[in-house]
Each structure stands twice: as structure tokens, then as C-alpha cells.
Image (cartoon, rainbow, N blue to C red; front, top):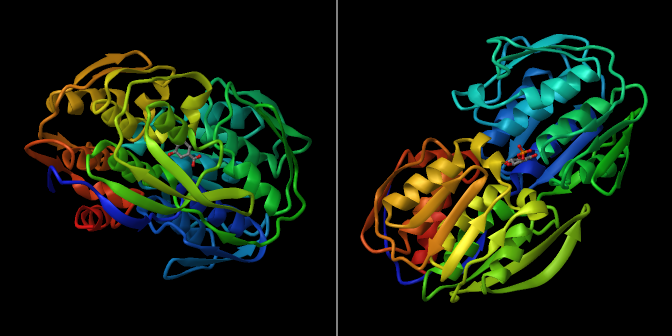
Length: 426
Ligand code: S3P
């Protein structure tokens, strides 16, 4: 797929549903009694992996356009799957389902693609084992495939060394079945979609500072869920809109949960022209339409508590920082190394190939902005966010940019290239 400099992005766009919320709605819908109706569900490959795992465990799930119906069978209604369950490229599927499987009355095996089979699973194996789970890495390398034999669990108070919603959620989902209270304390608060959704499904859950506290559930109740647009997908257009001269675009119905909205703060701090309109809240998840216009940007420092709130947006933010005057420093973001690719290394290599002045650090990168970029051939490394980041960047620089392995955008944003093209012609 090839991209060239455009004269600005203009028009309106509605991005697909939030990936994190789509996963969780299928999981909780499967464990609830009754039919959960999910609107604006993300039909990306990752969320389809979650659907296929729960279908394999006997949950009837139907997809009607962008609406998904999940006929939940209650907390104890899952069946032993007749096959190894394939989580594809999805860390959220692998880690969150592990928490559920840890408490079932059967043994199951989870695997995934080459990337998933390299991503760290010890971070969930340790706390789940402390709760009483029997969970084993079949290759003995603390990665998937994981064999999980359901066991009686007990609640723990886990002090997580990382701010990770996947770790927190795996423990909370296991906690639904545990004896006694389960607490997870994080260094900084990570996205809280599990907490919000568990509450709306009827679980006894509360938060104190960076600690989520859950008591075991007797029953969860089916819900109607309206999935907001994914701010992590919107991020590509928000960045494009401010960094490409001649742009003005409106991204409709974007989830702006405060545990996810770090990019909005960074855009403001960099001097972006950005306005929120039509703010609403559905099932505890706030949304807004976001208007952006091309802006003259300056560098900023991104560190500490804001990092988990924009972790998936950092590749796009790093590229945008090349279009800003002065330095942008990203630190406390070592988690980027264990995403779908090593996103620190891959971003530094890709931006350098485009002529940027960027340094790799142990836990982030330093971007010396203002140097003009040019087109390059970029390998996505099968990482959807890398492909989208460089596609957008290619629309703002001289020369031709070619994305090799461009199809991986289907993981979180099928239709991304069509939407980008529509805005280029807007
Ligand atoms: C996610 C949590 C984040 C994020 C991922 C989705 C989730 O991962 O990067 O894309 O849905 O819980 P970590 O929990 O590993 O930070």
C-alpha cells in the first residue's frame, strides 16, 4: 500500500467501536444470564477471536451487521471446548480469558499467532497461580500456548508491578469465582472498562485510588451495550488533522473515558486546535465528537501517570512529534516493547528511515521535531498500529511511503484505508 503527501484531510468520520469494550462485552455477555445486545461492536480480527473462543465453549453468538447478540449461560454455563482455542493476535483475548478459564470445571488450552506466542504471560500466570489457578506455559517460556485447568480460587490482594488493564482484568474476572474479596493495586490507573462493565452487569465492584476491589458474584445480568468509537482508532485522524496542513475534520462519537483520553491532553499540550462537542455518557462510558484543525505544534514531555491512558497512541504521537517544533520526550513507556511489536524500536527505525531525528531510550524515545520527513518503505511487522501510524505519516511528507504488510489493520480497524482515502478527497 502506497501513500503520498496530500493537501489536508477534510470531512467527517465515525471510527469503529472500541476494541477493549467490544472484547469485554462478549466475555461478560457470555457469563451473564440472558441475551446481551452489543451495538457498534468492533468487527476486527481481535474481537472475532474472542467470539470464536466463547462459541467454542458453547455460547450462541450471532453477528447481525455491527450488532452482536450473546446468549449468556451464566457464570457456570461454559462447556469444555472441543479444540485448542486460538486467540489470534489478541493479547486481550488471551489474558482476560485466562482469568475466566482458571475457575472453570475443565482443562483448556489457549494459543495464538507468532506474535502472541512471544508476548509475556507470566504477568497473569503469577497472580492467577497465587489465587490457586493451575496454569502452565506448554513451551516452558512463560508464553502461550497456555494450558489452564480450572480450580477453586481464593481472593488475593495483588500489587501489580505494571499498570496493565489486561493483568487487572484477568485477576478481576477470576475474582468473580473466588472465595473472598479480590483486590488489584496498580502503580497508575490503567483503563477501567472492566470495572465499569462489571458494575453494569451487576457485580459488586468498587475502586479506591488505584485499587479495584471485587467481591465474588452470584449472577451477572445481560445488558444492552452501546460501544463508543475507539479513541485509539480516532487517534490516527486526530493526529493527521493537526499535523497535515490544510486539514479540518470531525471525528464523531469517540470514547473519552478519562483512563483513555491521554492523547487529548497531549494534543492540547502540543498546541493543537481541538474542540470537544456533543458530550454524552452511555453505560458509564463518556463520548464526544472531536473537531481538529491543522495546528502549529510544539514538543512536550509525556511521562508517569498519563502513560497508561495513551499507551496504544504513542506510535502515532511519536510520529506527530516529528511535525512539532522542539523536543518531545516520552519516558516510563517500557511497556511499548511488549506490544504486538517492540514499538519503541520499530518507531525509531521507521521514523529514522523517513529522515527524523529520533533517539531510542530504555523506556521511551526522544524526538527532535521540526526536521522535514520524506517517504520510505516501512515494514508494519504485522503490527496494526504501526501500519496505520506510517500510512498517516506518509500522507504528510514529500515522496512516496510504502507500507509492507498493510493488511494487519484488520486487527483493530477494517476499512481504515478507505476511511483515510475518503478524508483525503474531502
Ligand atoms: C488493553 C490493555 C492495554 C492495551 C491493549 C488493550 C485492554 O494493554 O495496550 O491494546 O483491552 O485491556 P496492557 O494491559 O498490556 O497495557
